[in-house]
Picture 1 (cartoon, rainbow, N blue to C red):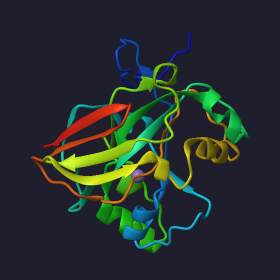
Picture 2: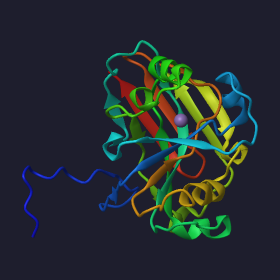
Picture 3: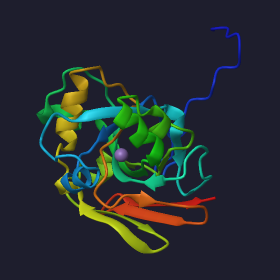
Length: 229
Ligand code: MN
């Protein structure tokens, strides 16, 4: 048994729909700009250039429904609804045609973003961490096992603020689909069980403030709800 000089931190995890057992989170990979209309609204050309990634710490993941405090040091706090992929089996240089064998399940998450900090970093050529990887920045609804829901390649993805729909698209519109994303990540670094991939957000991102009720969903994968405090 290993001795530690301080108490080891708990294993971050997210809930699984209809089960007591939880999904342990190792890392959270996030895809930037993976829907054309969102790339355009961020002032970028939506070409099929290779995708790029940023990361959030594993303990940014929080079970939804959740109350999320408006975070510090921002005055432009944004929602981004996203399809979440949960990796159950690791691997390197995974071929896209075998990628689904590595997926344990899927879910609905929100990539919460301090947009002012993200854009200032982007425009200065600095890392996005302060805009993207802050505490409680990845609320995720209970995951659903692929054994039950299959491997959805199409279906409505939407988000509403106080009942008003802001994002409404289809996961079939992903520029880089789930098998392609798994292939691309795994040729740069080994994927491991417990990794989550947030696959990018559709157009319609915008600000939220204290008191807002944010809801969203993906057909076949359930719904998410958070309240901003
Ligand atoms: Mn995002």
